[in-house]
Image (tube, rainbow, N blue to C red):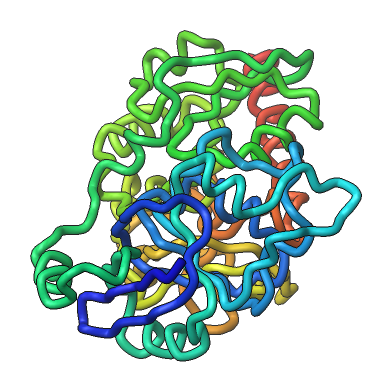
Length: 362
């Protein structure tokens, strides 16, 4: 079954279809990870995006029950060089094709992914559409050019109602902007008593829940499209420790007066080197983001950069100089990816313990 990818700049890529036989449009991005396609396609941060994987063979180890980062994948399409329809792995329960078909996600295989990657690196991310061959290409291009970037991705993927993951440790309120399950798992492994709340939960409700600390999760889209969260963070700073990841990192920066900007093609992969400024130590990290905190905008805030990307010197971590609050742009839970930065969850636990002890002493 032939399908094609049409881009807003007029490029057309014809290949073999797999997954769901439906038409879908989205922002075309690429991920350089060699493994972890199940975690990638189920990461809510890809909401509204058509994801191209640069590793040439995808689907060879199938799909299992344990590696999902969300129950309902939010990506709008998956593009690969070669798809394996008959996987072989002891954990495999179904093929990549069957999962995408069941979840209503179109796939496209057999195109020149190297050429498309170079194009995105040179021009930046583009709007695209996966569709059949019987469409009017010029009409599709015109529609893509006239379309606008999505602004409601967080509302689409955030939980609608709070829920509780009981534990006997510190009470963490985890604000779900498009949370990967790996973040929740890291907190559970540290015996935290976790309450997951919607993205638009006001600060007074977070405090009412008895939070010892607040985790700001990853999520999709432009952080300025979530003004409710910015206000919530401003109201929480100084009252409870705050730890932000990815979109949560950008929202913390905005709440403290810094600015964010769109990257040309983003950081998406599991091999991104990050330097800790205080020690010079390099961590290899997993990343997935299209926006970054503007370095110069930190100058007139009470924030300081703690980590930078080795490849392009963009801000990868910040901390507040007055309050117990810090964040990183990358994914320390690393699902999938390296575990170099896993210790940040322990630092968050320690920050909560210090805050609790200070209250007891008073």
